[in-house]
Structure formats: structure tokens, C-alpha cells
Image 1 (cartoon, helix red, strand yellow):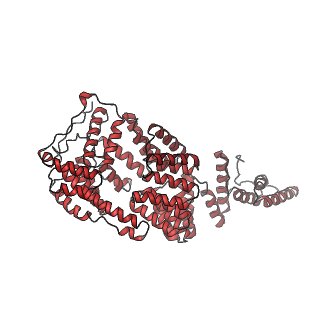
Image 2 (image 1 turned 60 degrees about the horizontal axis):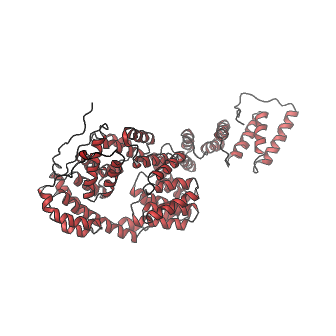
Image 3 (image 1 turned 180 degrees about the horizontal axis):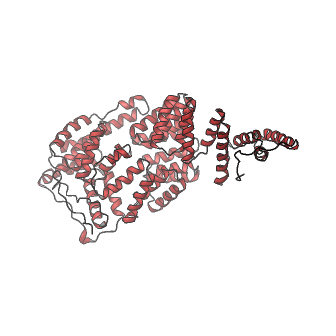
Length: 574
């Protein structure tokens, strides 16, 4: 039988953060619930509200504990007692976002909790000042020049504490955040990994680490603690890295071990299906989530993206009104309203709401990307480039921003720039046919036709969502007078359209039938040529050509021309 989690004293946290170690064993859910309730309280005391909320939500999804098993609050140390008055006053100021005032009253405090709040208040004060300046210069190039002036001082102070091994798990987390903000990525990763070892239950440290991992190879070299929290981290990072199959497997495992009621896991599964464009499945899960947690705002912007793609105006309108009633000044609400106006082709209004979202949180990734799309619709390419660049600053893994930049430079007829950005998008989404088709078109414009062919074929092989890769490949073969290969591509294209069972208008259908009719005619395959010519008659742009070809076939048949053999046939699908 696996051992249940036990208390592991750590030198830098002993007697200050008496958190139970988090073993990799899920068999003792009661112990896990105790740990979650404890860390929810500890993070709340330090103003780490998102981590506190995450832990509380996860704890809520597990069965309630009997009174006898509820844990008392952590013991107060001598240092905590000395700093109690200053901490209580400063925390009240911190909670109403008077960060400088909180830091002033905490200056000189010695307890770990008070010291963390002192440093965190100074950090947030700098961030708030930076955000206030950013709001005034939102959009122009100067935005990139706005810095958090407190970061360098904080780094110097925290570095000294770190070298003296005086930072607890929370202190390490803050030190990592400061390093990340200063773009010292390697150092930040090392510190966050250390933080997860010292305080494995703090979700914020795992999340920060997640934001710095760029690929699966990087993940392999991390020395992470063997803890059940690692499973949540891996599921999250797999979703971010577009390793959706692995992510869904992890989330299913977590549901199976007892987290089936977790709204966080349900929402993450919905996001995962959104990322692989399984729109029906994602919509179904989001609708279930709304019933389970009707006042939830997190991830509702992702839900609105799905409604937008499906052009579900009434549902999107209802969602926007509903979120406005809950909290109209949340970034997600502004993004949902922006999507609603975008769907109604009111692009100026949509951009206005995405700007409003960014005034609330200039680091909100989705709003930058969506604003870029709106500027594209308004033909404002320079503003679109600016928005997409900001999105990449926030998260270099945002394939939509890289793809958007590629599209923008395509409009500006700059294929070399275009190629660079599409390549970056493709690296992030290697199995997304849209990226491959875009790359193929780019290579074609640069006359790198062999590369273009590879891209179009690969796009078809991974499942061409827009059903255009084969047509583009066929036209490329046509251009290179490779008539047999072109015909094979058009045949596959037609067969795919007829086999999918969807009644949709395919703009290139007539092009395919016209080419095949002429191809079979040249090969003296009268039956196949006649079938394709008849199909041409169903389209306005090829009707006359189809009729003319049918007359020619009839004339040649009457003259006793013998049909050729050993040529590819169109198949029975027609």
C-alpha cells in the first residue's frame, strides 16, 4: 500500500509555512483536501488571491471533511506575534490596493509572512504604476518603453536573501516573478523549480513555470518534485503546448481519481477541445459548465470564440448580456462583447471593447490577438501588427498572433516576412492545416515550388479543415505541366467532398470537374470525360465548356474513336 503524505520539514520553510508535503499518491483524497484548504489560507494571507481561489475550488470538488479531521490554523511564531499589528494594518491597505501604504507600514518587519507582503506590495505598486502609464499610451510604440521601476531594487534584495537561503517558498515564487519580468528567463525557471520543491502546493509557482516552458524538450530537462500537483501542472502545460491528446488523458486520469466535480478541470477540457477545433465537443462542455457554475467568468471569452466561429448570434448576445449583469468590468466580459460586435461586423465597436479589456489588464493575451483581428478587418495593418506584437510579448506560444502577423505581411506583399511568421505559427501548431496551407502559398510566391508541394500535401495528410490543400496542390502540378499528378489531386478532392456528406458550396468544385473533363478527354476516356463534363454543366462558370465538351465527345464516339485504358479513373463516388 502506498504511503500517505507526511510532513517534510524544509530548512527554509520550517515553522513558518508548515505545509504538508504533496506526494504523488492520489489514494488519500482526505489528506489532499487538508493540504488544499491549508494552502488556500496561506496564499490568501499573502494576497495571492488567484492561487487561493484555485486551491479553494479544487478543495470544494472533494468530499467534505468531518469535524475531527479539520486542521487548526498554522501555529504563530514569535516573529509573527511581533509583526502582527503592522501585518494586520498593512494587509487591510493591501486589500484595497494601497500598495505603497502597505509597504510603508511593513518596512522593518522580520517574519516571513510580513516580509513577503512587504516585497509583494512594492512589486504590485510598480506594476500598477506601469499599467496606469500603459493605459495612457495603449497602442503606440512607446508602450514597450513603460517599465516597472521597482524590479531592479527588488531583484537585488531578493538575490541577497536567496544566496543566504532565507527565502521560503513564497519568497522564491516572488523572486522568480521579478526575474521573469526582467527577462532573465533561465534564472527564473531555476528559481520557480526550486519554489515547487520547497512549497509544492502553491499553484502560482507551477503556473509561472508553465508560462516559461516553450516546448516538450524543455519540459523533459526540468527536475520537478514528485507530487500530485505535478499532474495538474503537466495537464496544463500539455494544453498550452498543443499536446492535446496527452492533456486530455491527464485530465481524464484526474477525474478518475476523484476530481470529477472540479469546474477547473471541466473548463480546461473544454479549452483543450477548443484548441483542436472540435467545436461541437467544446460547446457541449462549456454549456454543461455554465449549468454547473452559472456565475463563472473565467474562460467565457474562449466560449464566445466558439460561438463566434459557429455564427451563433443569439447565444453570443445572451452570453454577453449575462456576463454584463455579473461583472461588466472584467476582461473576459469585454472580450465577449467585442466578439459579439465583431460577429455583427461592427469592427470599430469590437476594437473599442478589446481596448477596454486591455485597459483593465494590459497583459491579457486574448484581447491583444482579437484586437489585431479587428484592425485587420478595418484594413489598419500597422495597428494590427502592433497588436499582434504585443500578444507575442505576453506569450510567445500564441500561434494566432504569429499567424495574424503572417497574414498582415501577406497583405503588405512582403513574402519573406510572411514566411518567417507562418513558420513560427506552424512550429507551434504542426498539425494545423491552415498554417501549412499559408506556408505553401508563401513558398509558391517565392517560387520555392518543391517546398510549396510538401506543405500542401502535409496539410492534406493532417486533415485539411478548409478543403483547399488538394486544389492548391493540383494547380501547382498543373502549372508544372504534371497533368497526371494534378488529375490525381482533383480526383481526391472531389471524392473527399462527396464522402464528407456535408451540403456545402465548394468554390473550386467546378475547377476540378473542368480540369478532369479535359484530362479524361485528352486520355480518350469518353465515359469519365462525359461524366465530368455533365458535372460542369451544373456550375455557371463552366456550363458552356461542359456542353461544348459533351458535343465533342458525342462527335468522336460517332466517328468510332476507341477509348484509351491504363489511366486513373474518377471512381464510383460520382
